[in-house]
Amino acid sequence: MRQICDAIARAVQDGSLPPGTRLPTVRALAADLDVAVNTVAKAFRRLEEARIVITRGRAGTVVAPLDGVSGRLEKAARDFAELAVQLGVDRDRARKVVLAALDASHS
Image (cartoon, rainbow, N blue to C red; front, side, top):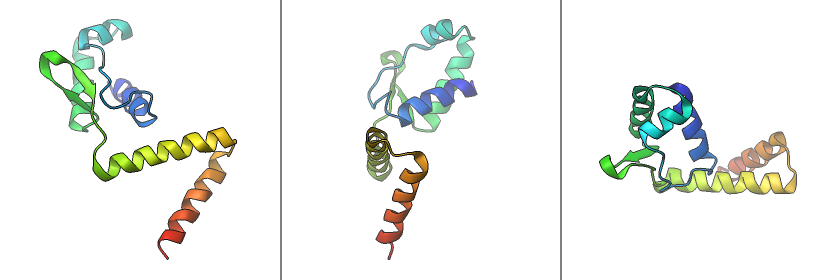
């Protein structure tokens, strides 16, 4: 169950599952992953508790919309990460740039 939660959360975080994306049904995902239906159902419940997905009964489960400050911040972080990759900037350098910007904005 934890692996399912982690995989979906990572996909939402990296933008490969954008808000509004409909997830497979519990039964379909269980069949695809060859796990028990209950395992997927528990994973979906945990993701819903974390506000990563919204379950709409028969209408299915979708990725939750980004909300307020955290949503804007996550989008900006994804945009920055994408730009860093395009520019060939390594992780350490990208981290230093962000930390320097945070330090400058707090002074």
